[in-house]
Length: 372
Image (cartoon, rainbow, N blue to C red):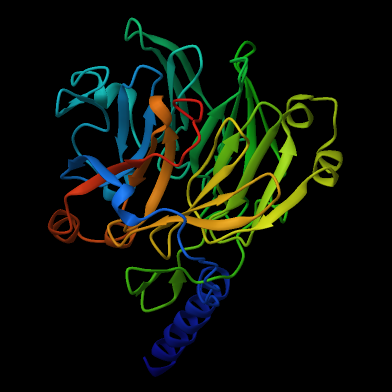
């Protein structure tokens, strides 16, 4: 019996050590904050919801859509539209279970289509890409990704659509598989490619996120929340991207990603490290190519201009975990605050007691393309 107990103890130590080496630990990240350009009072609340917000997308006409964050394990509606002061299931309540599993990313393209990406519970089930015609509410595109595109351990969670409406770029943060990548999807042919898998530009670095006076660790510190490529912002020429726990904001030409004749190694060689960034979740870009970056540790939004000058644009203690960004009409930039420090691996009682959860907006001074 003693030998069995000793064996089990040694096995437990080996497993714990292996998990900690792969998933645990991490160094603190330096605070890149500068004095905010705008005062906190420019931020206004748009809506609150009892369940954690996932991502947000606002159309050119001001229609606002958001997801309930799948890490909160929602049992009811998962994609909603904010209509006349109320959050209503979209396209309707009856189809929620049929259409959505763990839907997170949402974006409205320039052809008034609402796109959603569902990671299929970290690739355990089937990842899915849907599009709805906002003029009719009809489902107009439905793509289920094979395991070579969305394998077990993948986390397809942010997406952007090219200006011509032909290509979708999806970020796979790969929290558990640890092989993040960018997915390039051609809408017309319904074909997808994984590119830059595990490249340093998409990979998580060993930093420890601190948010709301809490270190984002679990299991007594054995596991730390670290993610690969997360936020992406797509201009007419460049894709900007960076890992959740990565120090760099990178860019690559869209034309390099969409040309299947260019080898992956050649795409990697053409990537440019643009600036050093905060630990970030969401990105957006305006018509003047200023890139907006959320700072999940300090409740702020950064902006980097074409001269690569990185500054804090606005900061507020109300921003618990600024997640996705989406421009709407009239120059408003919307912020989905997912408050992930109170969501990830938390009990349902804790999640409920930490609500409500909020979408904010402010005007940074330059307009962007609505929905993106």
